[in-house]
Length: 281
Image 1 (spheres, rainbow, N blue to C red):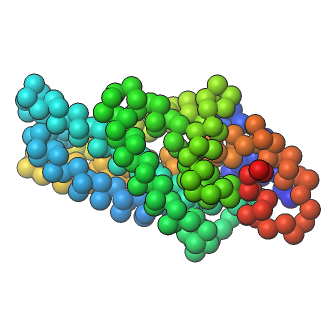
Image 2 (cartoon, rainbow, N blue to C red):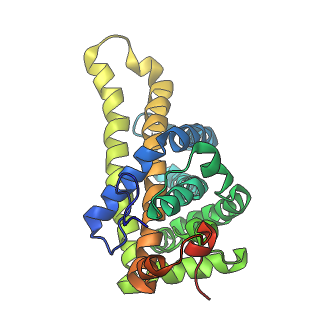
Image 3 (cartoon, one colour):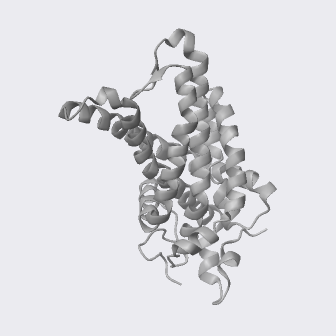
């Protein structure tokens, strides 16, 4: 078997942080025609979910700051926590096809769109997203708890898709994997989120203010649709990129701590892919 996928998405060896981030981008590039449209639909749905809360706290685009911070702070905090939960749920939903693509790349294949979706266990991923989203939202209400929840729960869907463990065991295995090697996977996941958060913020605000500087039209009169469109567009790239990072982190952590690369190199020809990638019990 080859040591890397068709575009060297995931070499069979422990990777540096930079290589992990690069691998996630390569994985997204390979499967963008599936992941990006799905992410765009989910990002637009997220904007629709958050809109009533933004109206409640009178948070105006493009910054989404409330008009009166003192009176609106509790509701604004709820808005932030809800946004954290929807982000986590969307990334989890996209984690199914991302994990399927990463697993195939590790074995030197590039699956087509139909296989990517069919093999991603969409039902299980949906249930995981429904669970992970509220947990992250509740943790975000505490403030620092978000870092713990977001960092540790990112591998739940990759575990479901690739490791062949029962659904009720997936969260605990995901937490254990994320916590190995001094919580390396959790830390890299948080680093990836921070990087994409800065990109999202820069592009989302930059589009609005850039259009204002061009003076082509009164952008303030179109602040809501312009801001929603800008953030939905950049989130359609950020969310699948973060899902791909989760998939890459999952397999790299198994290579680093479970010897998955050695197991694959010693596997006889003809072993089915799910058996090759399943976690040993």
